[in-house]
Length: 495
Image 1 (cartoon, rainbow, N blue to C red):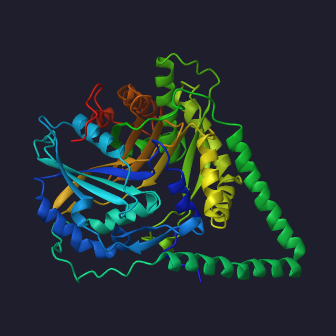
Image 2 (image 1 turned 30 degrees about the horizontal axis):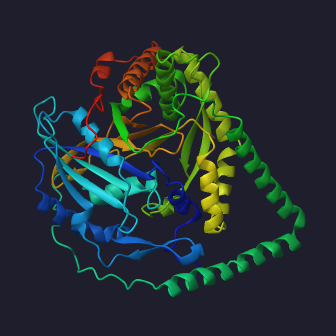
Image 3 (image 1 turned 90 degrees about the vertical axis):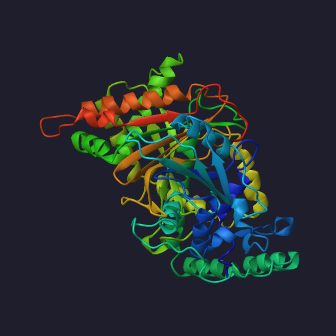
């Protein structure tokens, strides 16, 4: 029987991709209204919730000689004070300084000898525009532990849906870790699983004998689909300023807008919210590239867009259940309507193509690849450029969440950088707003603030273009849009 605590092939791939300056953790910045809780108060609250996410007290055990994928095991030395950090911003504590702190924290690799997550309680954040006190929580979780969708589930578990909900402040029961497995246990368990797989292979072989035409046809379809995905990647990804070797430091910026603006765009131009997100990215990057002197005539970038294949029955489970699409970004197009129509048509074609199915096929195949082969494949991928950047769009909680009675007012997401990809863009909706989080290599994109500004202008132009007699847009809504980014020239030392 397969060990449910063993990493899947896809989960393991995120470990192998973590080389050099590329750290495979997803993250978020959460801003709350009100005075910050004390560190000890927050610690007691967090400790009371850990029983709902057992993986947060587990670390990885690696199988000797790479005879199997790693296994999640209880960490007998787990200390919540290591994982819950405490920081304070210097005066005036504006959003730019919060982005700078986040960039430094995102640049640090998670310790693989401990559970793969960290939280940072941040005080010293300046008051909101209405004078309300604010504080922030910055969260990092390794991609091997959680993907974007299940990460939203964890956020919902850790926080309350009501300001008045009574919070638990003491653990429900004492946690007793299971004994650590020995090297012999790890190797033996991996070998048992390996030799139990032939039963499934035999079942497939029997199906081939009973219905050879159907089985061969299905296999042919999977090969054809995978080939289509590979060809889509190989022929794409033109060289750009985004695609260069990344270093150890990071910049971070965000743009926060009303979700109603994106609904206005998709209704006015007859598409989807995802089309509006991708078009904003295409128009914004086009403006930025032209400012940098890049000739964008005929230039189409390729975005790797993760697609959740997590079933409703798997809601709340950790681990990765994602596929991918190669989405074209027409940075050559400066007309907002034409750009939206291009993206909408292409994405409509992709949804009916074999790309998403093929990506899922590769995910399944990764489960059968020995760790040594998976490691070599990750090294090879690090030297290729199958896409220009990653763009994610994850629906977050659409109700307000609370931490110890304090309302979360903003949620800014983070997608990790891969080697040769100096910019990653994550979009996430939360309680009537949609935020873009932009993570960049510190040296490759010193002008990240210009990218954020170009996104803001692109969204404004796109919303204006979507107006008609039936679809009016109140531009005053756009004035509530706010942005922040790592200040130029800020120090790299960790606060």
